[in-house]
Image (cartoon, rainbow, N blue to C red):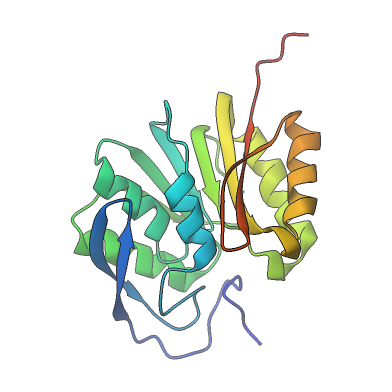
Length: 200
């Protein structure tokens, strides 16, 4: 059985448009079976987009991008941003490329297992990790994000507090040495950790 975090999908690929309203923009993008929250913007991502802290962020990674809604929303707000989209799901990557073309936006899109074979670093990494894939996968998201942030850059991760959020908050705090909740709604929290300069 395939899941949205599987590399390959076995359902028929039939893209359809869904409406998105976020950060003052209203637009349509393509979705399809085999991707997360295929019919509407999910509550967790909605919370992340509402409360995301973009201060000094010019180079952004949309990690586990799905059909690209997070990075696309930010590009519509500021086309000067450099946004990279990563997902292990081939269909998600196809849809992200299709949506960037639809909205005449530019972004770097790559099918990838988290940050495997990616050498660059980012000012901001945004993710709604696939908690249903298991804790180990989410821990890997956090650990790899840490190594792909510039000094002073931040990981901002959204999760339902009672479905793993407390555990992921603790994991982020232990690795980064800091973590805070910068927004919450509908049972979801947006956690932020900053990669601090090594002063030792």
